[in-house]
Image (cartoon, rainbow, N blue to C red; front, side):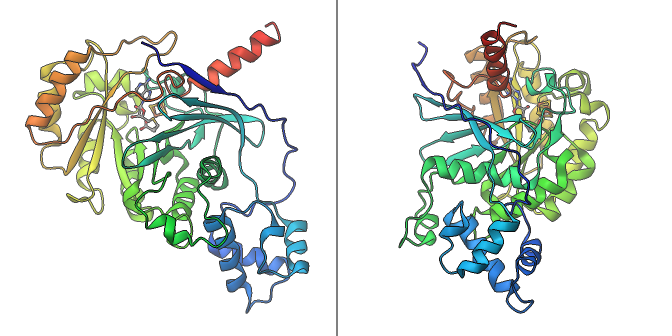
Amino acid sequence: MTAPITPDLLTVPRKDEPQKPNLIGMSREALQEAMIAAGASAGQAKMRATQLWSWLYTRGVQGFDEMTNLGKPFRAALDELYEIRRPEIVERQVSIDGTRKYLLRINGGHEVEMVYIPEEDRGTLCVSSQVGCTLTCSFCHTGTQKLVRNLTAAEIVGQVLLARDDLGEWPQPGQRPQDIHDSGKRLLSNVVMMGMGEPLYNFDAVRDALKIIMDGDGLSLSRRRVTLSTSGVVPAMARAGEEIGCLLAISLHGTTDAIRDPLVPINKRWNIEALMQACRDYPRLSNAERITFEYVMLKDVNDSDADAKRLIKMIAGIPAKVNLIPFNPWPGAPYECSDWERIEAFAEIVNKAGYASPVRTPRGRDILAACGQLKSATERARRERVGL
Ligand code: SAH
Ligand code: SF4
């Protein structure tokens, strides 16, 4: 049975392109400089930057007028020089299971996807890092879309802010941010860099954005609740551990180079052996901070018992979780999803070897489809509307 669709289409007229620098996404140091440029004395800059940081990231305010602990002339000076800008929501769909899928527009009129997935014990936001992708994984719909550009740190942080706006999760006046953070019931409790793009090919912006997202004085997500997924950009992995320090997920999908090469072509550059070594060397790897190996289940391609056994051997000794992902088909995709019994048999072998291997339940099937699809579907609908 297909779940009924709850479409909730918001088509927003395009805002003017920004003229002023965006305060969102600036590091604390850059924010201090921005305060000086707006007239704060060198002695005051740090305090002003802290106040700004708090308005932007613990209160989520979108206008300088709301920053009541700043004098009116200073607010006016800030308004003159800067913007507080988030991406715009072009389309928003809410699934019957609560999954929310958004198509966002960023500067230049480009579009990226973002997905919010509510679960019993957490709410996960899946964030994009690039418009399109330079890599061409054959089962991935984003892989068919050319890289248009990297997202800025502001656009990456902006996704989290936008999701909190939409979920209504900013503290109310009088409510302490801590009350939400400590409740163990945050609606948006986890962030995964698993949207469009390869985050390690946009390293600096992803690092700067995740640092803001994990900052204890702001959005305050623990680094154990932030996961960066990579297709295997081996030379950047150790740097990610050192400079970002979040959890790591690896898009593995194949257990021999012959199987993985066509699925994840970056494997021709850094093969399985190099990838597994980089995993073993990942800073801070421990039982509390395991690497997640993502494995998309493709019928008759990578789903046999022999594949499962090779998988266990490959990851032996690495504190790991295995995430089995039922393939999400898209029009023209050259694969099918493995049968359910096959997925269960595969999971059983991995489980028996002592690895947690949850099968990622398909969420928002009624709206979601594979990553990159909402964008294509919207573009198709637009073309049809104008009769192309
Ligand atoms: N570029 C990064 C992160 C984005 S992709 C990476 O490749 O890891 C996030 C995850 O979704 C990856 O594990 C990717 O392999 C998986 N994925 C992509 N297309 C999929 C599809 N059609 N069905 C199931 N999983 C898919
Ligand atoms: Fe890019 Fe990841 Fe898709 Fe591969 S799976 S094409 S790296 S987004």
